[in-house]
Length: 326
Image (cartoon, rainbow, N blue to C red):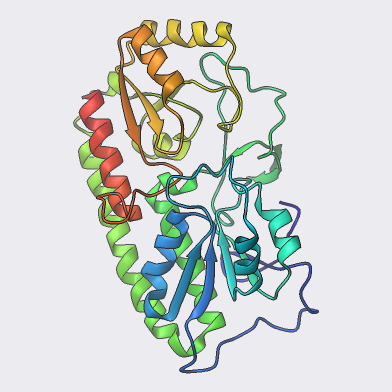
C-alpha cells in the first residue's frame, strides 16, 4: 500500500489521509466505551478479540469464507471504517481493496499493518508456473538484511504461529496506547494468548513429526503455505493457479506440467483453501489419483465450528495435513 507512516513499538501506524493534522493518537477516556476496532479478516479479528476482550468492539470487513483477493467493500464498510478508532490489517499487499476504502472513508482511525516487523518471504517459483518478471497487486519493496528486493511478497504470515506472536505485541501496544486505562488488562490477555500460541507451535511440531520427510510436499490452489512450510519443514512443489492470487487461471500447458510434477514427485494430496472454488483442483486430483483436502487459510470457519478461532483453525489444518500425508 502507498500509505506509510511512523514506527511505534513493532507496528507502523498510519494516520488516514483524510484525518486532521497529526497531534497524537486519539484516546478513550477511562471507563468509556470499548474501542471501535475494524479488522480486515476474521483471523485478524479473532486475535484482536483475544487481546482486547471486553475493551474492544470488533467489526470484521471480510465475511467468513470470503476471498480477500476478490473482496469488494460495501457502503456499510465505508461507514464502519469512518467510525473506527483503529483499523488492523495484515498488510504486505493482502488487502488490495483497502487503500481506496480508507481514502473514501476518511475518519480519524489509526491504521496498523500487522505484517510490519515480520521478515517477509518472497513467493517461490514452483512447478507449472513462471514467477520471474510477473507483475502482481502484491508487489512492493522490502528491505531484508541490507538487500532491497522487489515484490511480490507472501502476505500469509499468520500460517506460522510465531508471526502471530509478533502480531500480539503490536496489538497490545496499539490498544494500550489508545486506551491506557485498560493497558494492564490488555497486557495480561496478550501474555496468556502468547502462551497458547507457543503451545500451538510445539503441538504442530509434534504432529508434523508423524509425516515421513519424503511426504512433506505441498500442492495448493495458489501459494499460501510459504511461512508454514519454512517453519515446519515442508516443500511447496506446485500450485493449481498461476501467479500469487486466486484471480488468475492456468493454461492447459501449465496444468499438464503440474500434473506431471505431481506424479513424478509422488504427491499424496492437493490442498485447497475454504475460500476458493475447488473445481479445478478436483479435476487435477482426479487426473493424478491424489486426494483433495480442504483447509482454512484466509478465513476462519463458521461460528460454532472447530475452526472458528485462529488456534482452532490451525489445529484443524494440521490434523488434515497429517492425515493426508503420513
